[in-house]
Amino acid sequence: MSTTPPVPGIDANLLTDNPALYEARFPDPDRLAARWAEDCLRRYGPPGSRVLDIGCGTGRDAAHLHRSGRTVIGADLSDAMLTYARARHPGPLYVRADLHGFDLGQRAFDAVVCLDSALLYCHTNEQLDGLLTSCRRSLAPGGLLVAEMRNGAFFLGRTDLLSAPTADDFTWQGTAYRSTTTLSVDRTAQLLRRRRVWTADDGSPPVEQRSAWRLLFPQELRHVLTSHGFEVLALHDGPGPRTDPPWREGDQPSGATDGDRMHLVARLAVPFHP
Image (cartoon, rainbow, N blue to C red):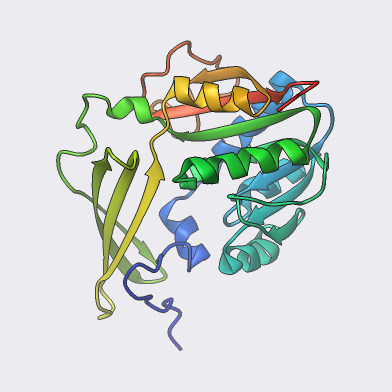
């Protein structure tokens, strides 16, 4: 019996529909993203240990935070991801929630963690407001928002990631997968659009998927966070889990926001009057 995952249609997401394949494509055996987030929590000291990992994906980061002694809820919109997380990365409670707007209890968390550009799936101002309103409702006074994402400022005058398609390949469970990715900037919508075509050597037809991230700029992000009652404690381009070189224990945040990644720590100000 073949263990090759079913091939979705156009605009389906081959990786998020197949979480084991996602982890094979983006391995993080050292749990670098979760360790970076845990370092931020220790450095800036939320009022307690209750953490929401919004956009938790496969659950590997939520599980690491759980093993670090925190009480963790992992939330995602993908049922496939949640099912996988419960089976492969137990410990946290996993729930279905939309990051554009969620209600998991008032003041139910001491920190909200949002990794791997999940925040940038808020494509519109309304969606971003919905996320930050939900975070504000969910956080205890003094609670932290910790996020890691692409940096919109990196694309001002740069074409490093836009000049040509990029190709990647890897093998999982005996099937070789190859992807060709093209990025483009939609300046009107302020989006980084991605077109990715997957092929596999198992005879399945090519799969095309399209997605996009909001291009947020550092001062823009500061402004919107302040308008939602957050005090920005750190906003920098690295080091972080996806920078080159990557973050290591003991690294201090840079004072710049010029690189292709942006790292955020913000505290819910007390009192807040919208």
